[in-house]
Each structure stands twice: as C-alpha cells, then as structure tokens.
Image (cartoon, rainbow, N blue to C red; front, side, top):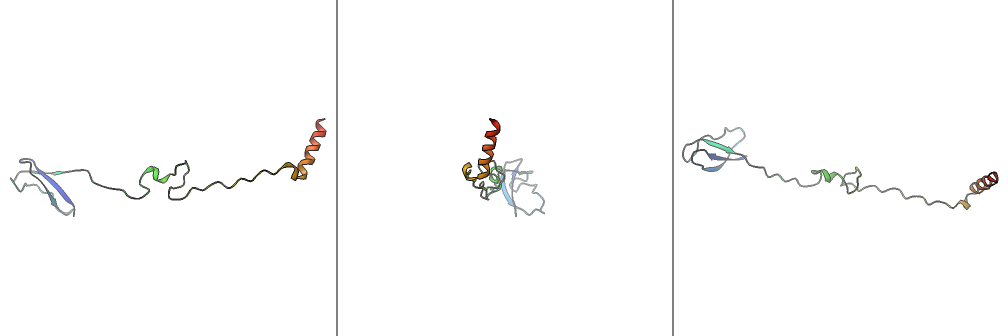
Length: 101
C-alpha cells in the first residue's frame, strides 16, 4: 500500500498515512480538526541495468550496434599481388607500351 503525506492548513501538523488506492484522501487533521492537504514530493526511482539512457544503446563509435553486442570488425583486406605473378598483366603492359611508341 502506498504511503501518503499530509499537512494541516490550520496548525501545520505533518504526518504520513498508509492508504489503499481505493481509499478516499484524508480531510480532517487528527490534532486540531482543521483541513488537510496532501503533500506531493519527487519519487525516488532508480533505473538499473543497461538500455535506460541514450548512450547505452550506442558504442563509442557511431555504429548502430547495441552496446551489449560486440561491434563487428571489418574483414581482413587482401594483400595486393605483385604484377609479375600474373601473366596477363605483363602482356597488357607490353601491348600498351608498343602502341604508345
């Protein structure tokens, strides 16, 4: 059951009362019989775990992968093969050199 805080408008007496959601709010001060006002305060909510903040769903880079999943790395690049190992490239170079002269 929730706990509600009340303050008397006449004498200033403050107290808390546990009430069901279905119960009506208290209206009479138990000390002086004056009118009561319900006090409202901030609720202490703590969000634990990941996913509650904007930066939790992002890694340090600009990727769209969630922080809980590891970022995918790029595939290893193939190294360039020297031109001398491919016979067609040598023939193409000699043909190009002959046509340029």
